[in-house]
Length: 120
Image 1 (cartoon, rainbow, N blue to C red):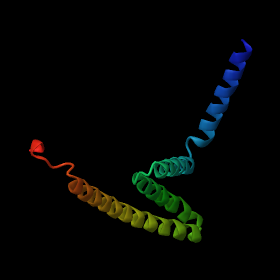
Image 2: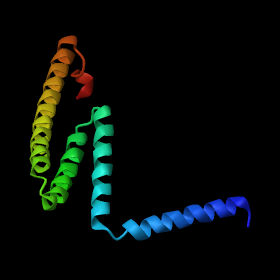
Image 3: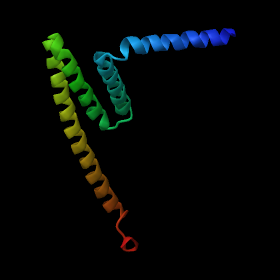
Image 4: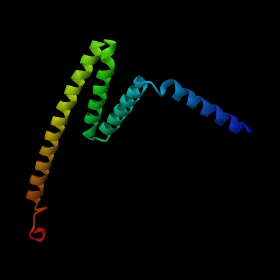
């Protein structure tokens, strides 16, 4: 066996040990899901995408579900309010987006862009 084969077999063995240890743990997979949805939410916010708030809300629901049995009520309350702020942000984001579209249409109409006889 080459040195690379030994390293790969050690890495493979480590991965299998990890899967065996945590692969059957529901808590592990819930935490992994929370991590993934939270990171996706952060990336979407960086791209100014409203779906970030949906991703965070889903993550927060799972955080609440996993935190309740541990009786960490302060954390549960925090994430409950976080879901409320996400809902508020979604509503505000949509309202602002609609306002931008109306203003853009108004500006286009003033400049004569958009509606012409060729468009009909």
